[in-house]
Amino acid sequence: MNTYDIAVIPGDGIGKEVVPAALRCLEAVADIHGGLKWNWTFFPWNCEYYLQHGEMMPEDGIATLKQFDQIFLGAVGMPELVPDHISLWGLLVRIRRECEQSINVRPAKLLRGLESPLRNPEPFDFVVVRENSEGEYSQAGGAIHSDEDELVVQNAIFTRRQTAKAMKYAFELAAERRHSVVSATKSNGIVHSMPFWDRVFGEVGAAYPDAAARSVHIDALCAYLVMRPQQFDVIVASNLFGDILTDLGGAIMGSIGIAPAANLNVERKYPSMFEPVHGSAPDIAGKGLANPIGQIWTAKQMLDFIGLPELGELVLGAIEDSLAAGVKTRDLGGSATTEEAVSDILARLYRRGK
Ligand SMILES: NC(=O)c1ccc[n+]([C@@H]2O[C@H](COP(=O)([O-])OP(=O)(O)OC[C@H]3O[C@@H](n4cnc5c(N)ncnc54)[C@H](O)[C@@H]3O)[C@@H](O)[C@H]2O)c1
Image (cartoon, rainbow, N blue to C red; front, side):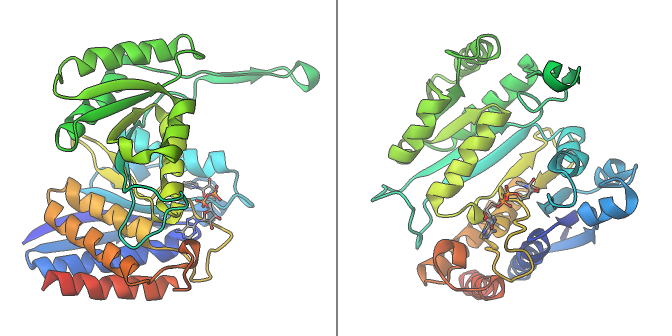
């Protein structure tokens, strides 16, 4: 029996609804497999915890998390009560940084049974590899003066080590897929970091002669993802560009509620963290309307990462079977509740797993 110790942080809002749904699917997968066991440990770290304790997680929170095999997270954020920079930087970004989860992997695929908001799209299937530890999301900067003299500086930080690591991961991934890597750049406007980004892309790409590699400016890339997403295989992007591209990826798939993400510690020194692209969706929280697919697809990414890709495929297959049968939550134009959606996916998982 292979046992996995997983730290579970449901977080805020719909995180508390979609995380239990995905855990039920992971339990079903363990049932089907027969030689796999999950040990869940739940952590109540979220904005309510912050309002009670003045911090998003206890002092030894990161040290505690580092003892687990993986981390499974919903979403954090209660913007009406806690400013987003506190909730995100106090928990999510801290975990990503201190567990050295420097690669963020976000697939976007036209799922069977789903209609994209694009008109007559060809089937698309691409993965955004986002540098996850630095870039535009840096703490380097500060503010001085006030009123009309107020001055704010926000620095973007790019290191060769992390830039090259994200690019190498993208090329390795493309070698298992369709051998194409596009780099998101903006070297015509950002004159220091982006020419550096392009140069490292050329250097890393030289070691992968079988891959078709090209750079595309981020603005044009956004337009291409709307006009012909089927042309893309692996896209490598900086922290901010990757963040924006993957909301776009979610949108063209049909809903941000289905988009998955994995924050990987590729060295496997510390746990990786699996969380969907979407946030805590306060507008629909507590109403049973949340689409659980983003969180369940994220569970598939966890299965892939721990070396059980056949079980990951089982999960994605069950999701597609359910969508193809018309079981859709409101964000996808249907009327299924979270419970109805997850019950249907579970039934189809067992059917496939027989
Ligand atoms: N990983 C994270 O923890 C994370 C990521 C993004 C945003 N946030 C936080 O979440 C809060 C809300 O942010 P936001 O409104 O910008 O983004 P959001 O992703 O929470 O919601 C955007 C829109 O998409 C809808 N939506 C999102 N997920 C859905 C799902 N699973 N099913 C159906 N509809 C869904 C919401 O109802 C909303 O209309 C903020 O506090 C923000 O900082 C957290």
